[in-house]
Length: 399
Image (cartoon, rainbow, N blue to C red; front, side, top):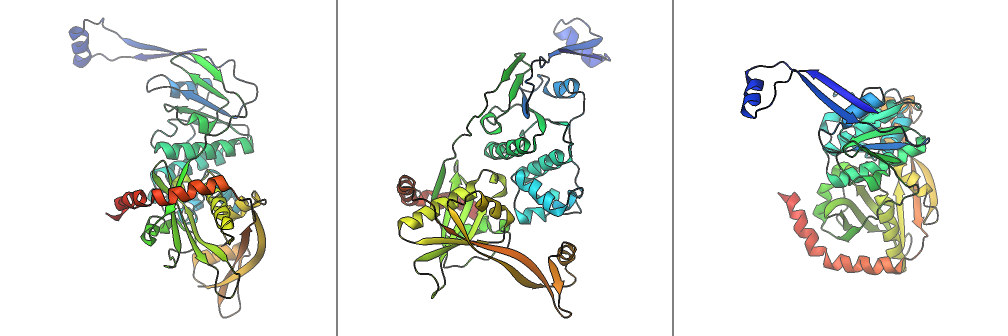
């Protein structure tokens, strides 16, 4: 299929200057032909990419070949991010945002315009994908053009998992090839070459190499605004920083279990993955590594959480983590609190006639997984070698 675009040119002194200066014949029309050889698309597919540089006709192919406009999002800046997904039930909205790798609770409660570039892009994807009907082909233009490349990879991995899980169809126009291994499209089309490539199935996502090392308590300030419960951190915590391609992406803090409880046992008091890098399974990977590390020293590692996203991660990791306790925690809140009204509608808040309370489910887990000796030797080596490097990098955030 060839797409012919014809536009009338209104000549004036500027166009005439170009014609005369470069000895070009005067034109009254602009004619452009774009190759869209997509007739041989596979019968079953979920993700397609139209790949090429600027001016190669990517956007035109999306609109003309699929005969629809580009999907767009719309946000009310006076509402929290999650409130903009009001065509869904609250639990479905949190699932959709989490599926796009945006599982930070503080982020859900902030207005769209206060989010980072990467967070806004994930929110846009969640809005467009969530709004689309099951039989609609979703069209996204300039995919990941305005985000950091490592963020683009994390985002692509989260997007492809959701699209395949829900069996939707999406076509993305992009000038970046570095996302392909993470996006794992079923087909790629290059307008410049006029060539359609059908990608092999069951490809493996590239390995994620993380650097893990001890860090100062002050490192917490990079991550504290992204913790879903509290910005506070016990100063007795043993703190760890995780880098991906030399970027701080995750923080973990560990404390001994209270005196008089379990011997040789420790608990994860804080675990935060920055929103731009959620959706890669980094949190669970880190938990498994540390569980194995403490097991190597004949110590037990526990974690207590009320984060629904971590509940789901633990459910997929039953060979490594055992649920040992589940409880409903009760907390006093103000009657006038808007959050209370929402909780009451969901049946998660109540009052005794004098004071108002909310309920939340809390689960405790214990690491019961394997001992990964090879991983541990590398981890301990890096803990020592990269300590000074880490502190130098953190100076960037001190200014």
